[in-house]
Length: 101
Image: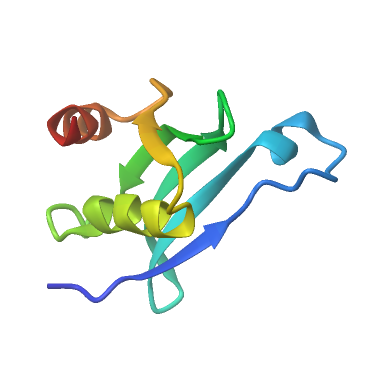
């Protein structure tokens, strides 16, 4: 199994661009190579984190990358509920999130 490293970039409330204030991502890295990512936004409400996209790149599929992305997001926001924000997921991402419910 591949050893992934997860990096969370958080929303920047001071950013001029609206999207940068609201949305950020978690990256799964193998060394310096991106293996996958999860885009998320905060809200609605202060205790909700909404997943807007999740994707694992070939050849890292079926190695725990997406599960690790969810776990890293939850660890970064331990007092929040992580929900599927019905964003622009890949077909595999939609299926994965449906299985997580």
